[in-house]
Image (tube, rainbow over all chains, first blue to last red; front, side):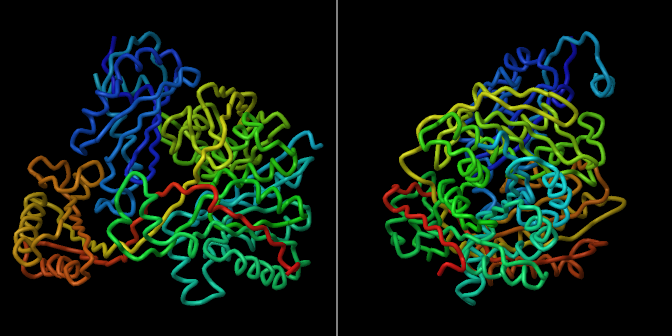
Length: 121
Length: 454
């Protein structure tokens, strides 16, 4: 077992509509889907974004794609036309999600995963 | 009926590269079947700005991207029969069509048959109060600011009709981005308006293509974790769609980027909320059972899109004036930079508290915290990981003078602030606020006009 940031095993992409942010989280190896499903709950994501005060966080599961879609309401400070921040779209926020740490059974770490594990553990 | 339709993406937004479409057009030229090139260039804000421009000059108000994006590929597309569809008509599709005609003349080409889609503009059909009553998810319109633009998202049917009538080029204003692909597919395959699964598949094609390189390795690369070959010359996507809606996403040979399971899935879920109900004007797309399979180098097959009946209402985006955004920056670097930056931030906040009371201020420290943080949070640079910090101050107000006051305070830090303050930049941007409305279909009356027929 190793404690890793999601970034070591998963991809994420942000998109916005008004003040609503979605972050797609995709397991690079579908074998990690169950571990991510068990640990990266909507509550856990709400905690990671607590300073941006989400009104609601919903997780949608897409097992056929080994992916999840997180929808966070009211975290973009009004959205791209109203936010005072540099990133009104929330494009960088996928990497805030990827900083969440999870426990993963590590059998045969490869390539970039190896690099990340040795860097973090 | 054609076995396959080929649709390439020429641009994913108005600021996209003008040389991106060239390799796509060359690849399409070698494909056997109906071929289309689509351009999505119409952000919410763009349409409102175009509306303002049209008020100044009735021959303007189309997307400024048109003049940059079309000339490099227009001759080749007309020569080999690649049809073009784009929402670069913005607030004035007929003017865009006339501009394209002039462009063709200047290039010494035959006059293209250009169709114009109108009917998305709600001006004159719904009053500002009626629009306010339709707003969802906010109360922006109720504030009574004058409406600048109000546009419905039209569907794919008028685009199909335009191609049915022989258009080489179809110019739209606001349509659902995905309709730019579904329209050509309806035209070629003649899918029925209630053939929900195929309409869903065509909508998914548009969704995957509408952001250009975002499905071929753009907005994806993360060195060491998600490596993308030759991203500098990333190839833009081409979709191959069969009559059942099964789709292969690929890209032109010899270009950079990549198409694999992961690039496709990231784009599949881009800007999606409930994956079982992605609302488009022509269908509700359900992505739950979509499957994505790598079938060759840079070739990914997508199947399993399901459709549900189209929504009762259509979405419209309404833009109103939104005051002024002011931004000013100043840098501190070297020994004790964080403390000097902290002092500068505290000075500006303290002075504005009495001199521009009520002005909400955001302060970022680029190099320490600039995008993850929340506005209104206190800036604390005691543990800043950098000795090179660029402070950024931002505020917004309907009162431009108040915003100017902030910028003046930041500039004054040069002489009256902490040591070594450097490189002030300041700017004011007029803002537009946007609201979403749900509009009953009885207000929707798309019109297709062949230019030259009138």
